[in-house]
Image (cartoon, rainbow, N blue to C red):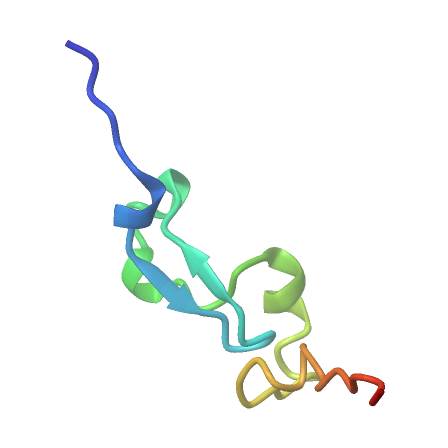
Amino acid sequence: MARTSHKAELPSKICLTCGLPFNWRKKWAREWDNVRYCSERCRRSKSSTAVSGAAAKNPTIHKPEG
């Protein structure tokens, strides 16, 4: 029988740079405890961008009244 897996069952973390969640990947299997960034781009820009949470990545959208 085929073994199925659901992406929702994978562990996830929050990226320290952008504040967005990211899921476990097979290439990170050996180092999952040490993974802190969702991508190489976030890892490279870790010192120049200190974000506290996803609020800086997703600014508040103002809805027009009416």
